[in-house]
Image (cartoon, rainbow, N blue to C red; front, top):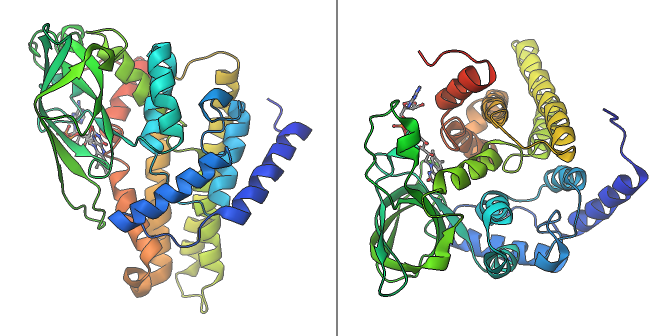
Length: 388
Ligand SMILES: Cc1cc2nc3c(=O)[nH]c(=O)nc-3n(C[C@H](O)[C@H](O)[C@H](O)COP(=O)(O)OP(=O)(O)OC[C@H]3O[C@@H](n4cnc5c(N)ncnc54)[C@H](O)[C@@H]3O)c2cc1C
């Protein structure tokens, strides 16, 4: 692996840095409806300047950037203090599945609206009885031959940004009931699931928001009561939703949702926080070690990602290794925020960004598939250990 950037990549970085430094908004709030509007304005500004989805084809609003340039852009985005992206479920989770499984009509219809932040997508997978055991999904899609489509019924829960989104991608059961018990007949339980693309203003859909521990107002439960969707709302084949969904989880756990730039930037801010301490306390050496460890973690994740991107750019597909990414970034992020709170001491509760960041970091080992489940994946699929 050659770790040097080419002249073209360095020029791309300089261009991205100049635009971001001139345009990244300072001190945006997050989680509230007003904050959401401000973040939408930011997304639209990025879109107009073609920085919203750099790696997408030009016809959909991108720059045809390579995966390396995408990584560079991410690094610069977080270095400049760019805010979290309200479009992330659409651009990082749904879009890769649309590129792989969508028809040309679906791509032409959905991708430009995602890029322009006109359509905002949330992920409708989890249900009250289906979280880690996603194949236990009970929400149904029943055939409506007369109208040429499907009637969706059931409940989705923990829907991030559900309250503010316009669309949902979700898994519904079109085949026989879940049947086999967890751990048995997995293949059968995965069959009969279909991946649907649904507008949330469809009659029969109710979105009920609820608050989160960190004050975020975007979380929601989504209820479906015989909501009609046409045939072209199916992404991929009917009954093959599991494969489409697994392509999405690869993106979610792997590098697109949490690129290393985010953690490199956080580690840099942690070092600044350490340097700003007026009076080093007696436990300073131990704390200094934790700060250094956070920096090493971010670098290690960066190099691990570079190795993955090398493989992907040579034609490999992200596989179960994405569980390693997810374990690493979620645990490193939590340690980093714990260290920040230790540095701030009693003032931590008064410090908005680090305290809020810590509360959100607590959720890292849960969302995108819990870390216990990721360890099962690593044990069985990477190390070849027996299930029991
Ligand atoms: C901040 C946040 C955002 C989220 N956003 C979304 C979203 O946008 N869309 C969406 O669909 N879902 C979302 N989720 C839901 C998330 O995917 C689930 O919470 C997660 O998959 C776990 O499911 P569960 O909560 O039902 O817990 P359970 O599956 O009931 O798990 C409970 C505990 O048992 C453990 N466990 C379960 N099975 C095993 C096993 N086989 N081996 C070892 N341990 C096991 C788990 O690790 C966990 O500790 C979000 C969750 C959070 C916290």
